[in-house]
Image (cartoon, rainbow, N blue to C red; front, side, top):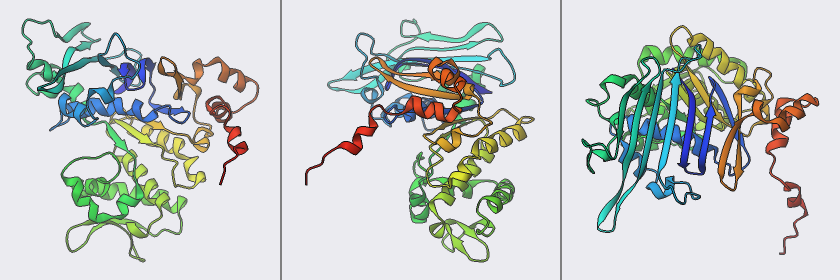
Length: 386
């Protein structure tokens, strides 16, 4: 399955937002358009569904509901996320999951959140598998602190949704962190989202699968970075995992930042079982390599078609990525800041961009011009006293 539709109410900077998604999505916008907040809504659902997670933990990890709730929320201060899921090759959807929650507690009581509504609708059965709210006679203040999504005994009839959310992956490899392999031990305590657990995940992976991934990655690296010798996974005498180039014995601390980000990106794509979220993969790697990433993603997705659907969402500023001819206007989504919060639209639905493309602009040129921060030229005219 893939995510077919997502809808927010009061989620961070999105006061009201709804959009249909595709198998491959490129999320773009001006600075401070909060592309990360869009991605974080999906991570939030993953954090609720995962083991040792849950609604209260997911909210606390984000600083509480005051950090989650849209600053523009006035009369209605609840937060809701709704997603629809289905198979990529089918027009109709399979599931809809809706979660609506609000603040509770405060004063002498610990601030928490409570569920206003939680619903699971099956489009195939044309009925609600779950429909609970804060007015149900079998609900109380305690039960409303926990979603059925996080409870194995309660989600038996929609366990596939829980597994789907648990499999959502997020990658934003920070090369400097991977180079400090001594920091890897800290990630065994708690999962993070910034690349620290990349080597740890390699260590936990089935050896046969890991070796298979490395064979494919090395084929890519021969073309992208021909001077780099074959890469492999090793552990030192103390059991700390490393990436090592054979022959030269170079380890990750000697590899360039761009090489580390590229390796992390390729590995995540190969190992992805469902939805993959990438933050700005263009940072560090060579622009020539970055320009080929959309095509590489398509190749990986096609190779997995017989096994399962995969979906990739990329938050990017990169002209080189958007310039790839395999990208269609229905795969690019633009975030816009408005007085009522951030909105998101498919490029194919924006008449101004369509007009620029009809006038002869490429998709990338039209999008970059459309999302360009207004009056940036004035920066060069600033007079700074010394």
